[in-house]
Amino acid sequence: MDKNLFLPLAAVWYDKIKSGEKTTEYRELKPYWMKRLNVKSVNLLGKKNSDGPERRPASINWNSGLWPDFVIFSRGYTSERICFEISGVSVVPGINSDLKIDAPVFAIKLGKRIYEYEKNC
Image (cartoon, rainbow, N blue to C red; front, top):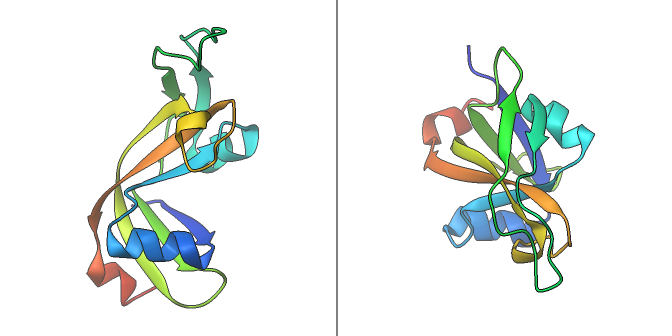
């Protein structure tokens, strides 16, 4: 059985994902998003230096069971939706993401678009 991650987006971000301009969605590394992604813990391996953000990758420890296979984006809270396979989740410096924050963030890499699913959601 597939587990889906539902994410309403502002129109500007939804349109960029729909056009293919944006292929990664970012979320803050906080307990709320760890629970939504079914992450048990994150080991931050990099150190923050005075010359910039962390340089080494982090490792993710997943809970047993299902983690999301698909992400379904809605344009705000409308019925307009697009669906993608999740090709990977990693932790990256937030300063290099859309969020522009000085903290690590989850990077949800979008895979293949699932047109068949969109018709049924």
